[in-house]
Length: 262
Image (cartoon, rainbow, N blue to C red):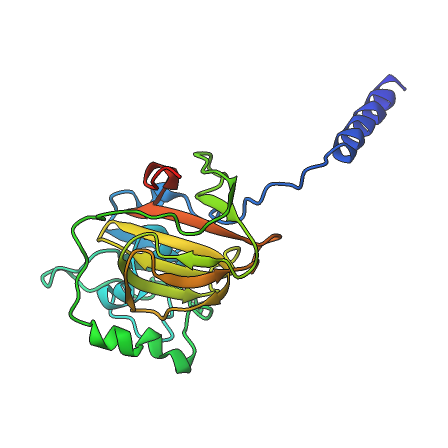
């Protein structure tokens, strides 16, 4: 009887704690799928079940088109658990990347959500064609705030913490490029980010702009710092806001370390 009474008391305490929550549960889905340690200083990555070429590119700090080129992959970019992918340019003397592992029979189209609609033609817009000879700068010359609004979420070092910052404002608020660079992704292939824009600024730095309402740029467009790239929305989010991340060699870093004081 004593143990039953203790168990009932614990249940009542848990119910009381749940009922007293007034603030919404924190959103922590944005960057959970991968540990960044899996990519630290690695030149080769072993594909795991559920991976896509895009997700591997995102967490390793690459453009998925570059990964496809490094590994001689063509659309629809089928990859397999156990397959090894080069994360950097392959030396011509190096062996070709491993294909389907020995004994592997099940196939996974691991990039179905990454393929771009035909009308986008991989983002080959007129501006991308005109600026095809541009190259990445050695370093970011200046950083700008990506949107006006209230800071409602801060960066966290925790494994399941917020990997960027969140800025809330009204729907349609302009979303701006935080620095000059090249658009390497637009779309909704990464769960939890909604309509997403990713810009590559140097060989080491990427920024991500999530939950947009409208995306105003195309993949492979070269853009300037402060250029309008999207409008704020709530795609993939419970409120209208911009989720903004800065990644250095694939690792999330605190954007407030780079952004100027307001």
